[in-house]
Length: 405
Image 1: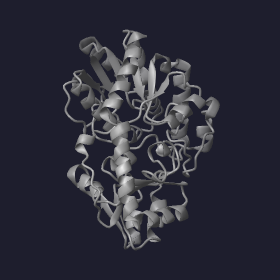
Image 2 (image 1 turned 180 degrees about the horizontal axis):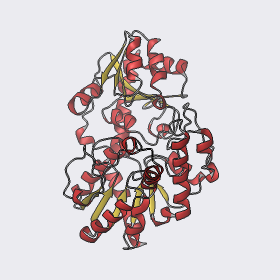
Image 3 (image 1 turned 60 degrees about the vertical axis):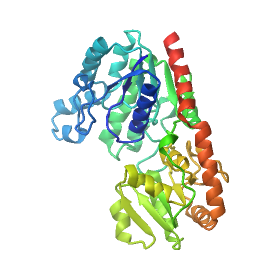
Image 4 (image 1 turned 90 degrees about the vertical axis):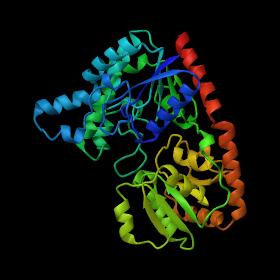
């Protein structure tokens, strides 16, 4: 089968990119021909398809020209890109894929490409990595970090009332407008199936009136590259961005109260400098790591902590430590409880609850037997439920249904 994967970015930028590249490798391993369509971002990896791709737009630079004409041009570009529409036209004429698999395209490539794909009779499958289609602020959070579902029943105007997008009336109005325009144009009718990595996300789409074409297919790991380690050094890890929605401030506050155990924070973000100024003796901020360095840090840890306070989908920050044989302490929110079996592969706690997190860190770090037992259970669960074959079989089932339609 000839499959095209579409994502705004074509470099390792986040979970959507990680999943897209892993899916590409999986499909090629099973004999499929895979092409890509993305923006021509300066950090992109090389691709033989990039001659077809639309130009990259940096919105922070684009809006420096405050003229009315330019502002409207930028807004229109973020909602419905005519350039992307023309580019996909040429791409489809030359490549002629059997099926298109979309990841994240909103704001940059935009749904302008969907009609061009569909008018050629090409099936469209879309993996949902966040909530942007039903939440103007993407994450169901206010600017203050509180859970918010005020836009339910298509009340997208609430985004501007609450200024939930970057605490900016302008940005919130654009996000509101994007959702209304896409509904009026009925762009999502072109999608044959939406794939949700978690049941939580799927149920949210059902609540918001888009559940008829959403099916759950969990993310997966290539466990051949993840050698489990059931011996550990005297530290636990956090892997991810350093911002409020990830709950890092909750974790750092908990770590202060367990001074006998070291926390290694792996990642960067806007809170890094603020935390480093506190000079906490048992918290090490090691910065961004990848490859062998990241692998070694994870393998040698006692366990991992994922303290998110937003509706996480099906995060790799839980899946990856589990693949390396690590128990995970995670917050009871979004899709995280679908990964962590409380008391078997780790522990769950209420988001923001520092006292409960402190108790669980103390409990697990002081019991090496539980660390090993839960780590082995976590690895076994990844091997059985989140492996490549399980994911591939489910993906092919959806592809075939889309082709039959």
